[in-house]
Length: 557
Image (cartoon, rainbow, N blue to C red):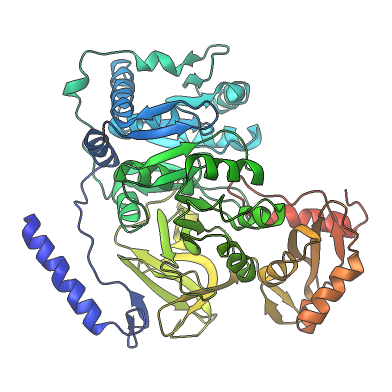
């Protein structure tokens, strides 16, 4: 099909959608929400093809700035290093569809290494830098990697995990060498064939492009297998940056938001600022002001921490055009307060999952409502109640979504894949919510996180969003103590602000005065030094519940 014909079909479909659209394209008969505009890209295109083409087009532009060293990398240099790495790996005998493990922070070479893997048809296997041997060894045993790229600081852990998994994978280290590792710089050598490089052809719909980590907030992190078509589709529907954007990327590359930031920047020829240093309000705000950051993706806790730091000013945030806040429910009052500092842009709610390869909703332009936004292009959504029936407008239920391209599944866990994909190909998000008449989607909470006290259900995030507004509270997590008769007895873990004198009873009364009876923190309020989170900022609920159980037994640290 020619481009002109496809463009006409797209325009025609767009007109039909806008003429027939009623409250977010809701079909009363099927009880489905959806954006019927088709996606205009070749599903056989690979990530490498998209990325390398963009690198050639934007060759003279700066692709990446390492904020830790000040070193800049232009797109033409990124293209050259990517091709050399791919060719040198091919010369060593590595093949398409082999797994290439990554256990790295956000260092300079990571982008080229990942694009090289894509270019030769290999599969980057992204391992969280927070994993220990008990988690990493089983991952290696299942994925059977041929190559591991790791920061030199993780060499001992990787080597021991490979040994336990019975793997002889070659280890390339970043930022130095150790033991039997080889520096990744050995792969940057000239080949003399750079101009003749052609990326490996892939089946965009069915071939695995990458294996990502799921958040692991309610248990062990799962390996999420994504296709080239699903990832490209996810990036193309996220129309939030352009060639003039400056993107801040603070999270390690094993999380989907960092991958999105990398692909958004590269496909659009934008500038990406990276750092290996951990988040602090001081560091993030310094980077925003110094590099005039226009776009960033952050978890809610970073936004709230910035507010509580006392360091915010309109001047420091004047460069921001759009800040996507995602990962967990955002306190609406905090979001509004943060936006009062953004004179030239907005911070908005957004929503996505690793399994769907990118964002599903973005509240942009900002609606002014406590919503995660409307469904993006190329997606369908349904709400399923407790009886398994589809429900309509303003009715709560579990959110199911479906994209143009299938979710391949969880690596080595077909049983878990079957649990989250229904007979119609919809992905079960695990989130409870509803859609209003305007197509705005509202999240109530996670199905697994909902507490049920004396047969009454409620979302712990309601209490968390209320308590975090207190100037005396730095961080908070609400969970439940299991009880045979009552169900879940609410309990709060609280990190107090320095020098705060707020008491357990103060917090108990705050909740009791604000919410219905079943919300009361009957199992107690316990002060802790920190709330367990993954490196994407999400609360690790199972670990938090274990801490609460210990506290309830008098062993709170």
